[in-house]
Length: 524
Image (cartoon, rainbow, N blue to C red; front, side):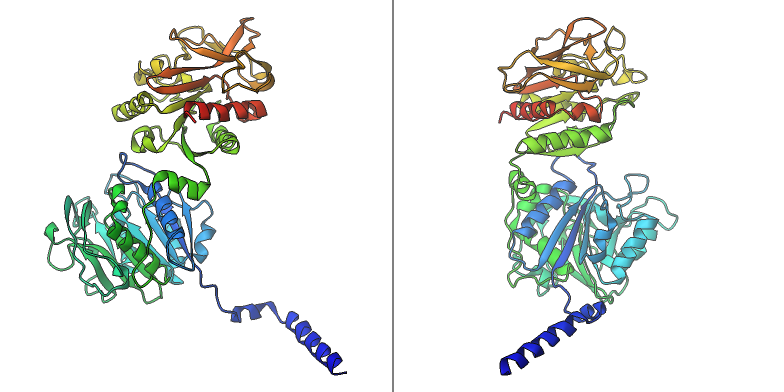
């Protein structure tokens, strides 16, 4: 009987607990995990400086593998999350991006009317804010909110709204000073020396009792007061925190253990998480290690697109190229929509490049810096894949783009479309691919297959190539080569004339060919 009573008592307790209204869950303790959202803007400077994308990837990797508990990190690119709802439960939002400098560059990505409303909602609920280096730039109008949320900003604008700096910039190698050594952000940080592009004479609120100077550079010789401050923090009345620094120009500074610790401490502190007694312990990770941690891939490829003939839907085909390679190889594929990233990105980080690009009716052409970087990369052994009409880029016959002509491109891409000659293609449709060289690693094991594409013919060039597969043209009546390989300097090149639209990438055999080709040009 005693056991029966105990059973019934337990049953009714469980039964009525299930019937409790849903809102009772609000009484449960909130999750203690702090979500840190790291947002990178597009790149605009040369390699090894203003490395926004590499920085957020590295920060995430360091924090994920650090001695800090109860934090979660996520990264977003192009200056803003694709789904801004992810910000609604963020403990900290960090931006590392360009900032507006009068008519130069664009605003920090959150500094638009609509996005500022989103940011205000996050700040009002106590979310933290962190701005790194160039993202500290703000107009006076935007700066009012930045002062409240983050404590300070780089002031480029005078009272008439013109570009007339109140703040300043100086690049130097020097010792840093730490005015508030007891602040949590300086836990475990030892005095250090650093070469950086320091911004100073930062605009702070007058008599801001919230403001804590974390680091300053006396050698800058700024105005009186806080003008040599290069890192600062605020505890806001709404419960949120701000940590910002004007340092961060040179990516190599992450290798400095004390700089690294100070910035990571600041991020963790601004997120409201517990900074360990001796600070955040996190080693510097090489790019290969970051790629392995984030994407579980051992290699990395850069796909360049963003401009093309209007009949070539690069926005559809580029993700398919990425998927084909990542799904069949150990490579992660970055996609860039700025051809000048041939210079702005550090190409040494990549095993190979892919061109899904043509400057159709765009006479601008490549900058000399991008040309030099591209050529040097290939001559020193970097790999290259050239797809479809990328062989028509930078040519004097391009409609309205003849000024972009680059003769060396015909050395790099050995068969090109010449609008002044008889280059052409069969009507888009289905045709059969014949593997003409089954012994090459790219086509080994691949059987003849069907695809939907434009069958190019009469592509111009005299330099030697080694054909891999072909198809019979209904126009010329000939077997037209559609893919081949060759070397440019120490670099390997795979060029195919396939790849017109999304359907052109649907054949499993072609997807495998792309994967094999990347392995081959990357020498893996």
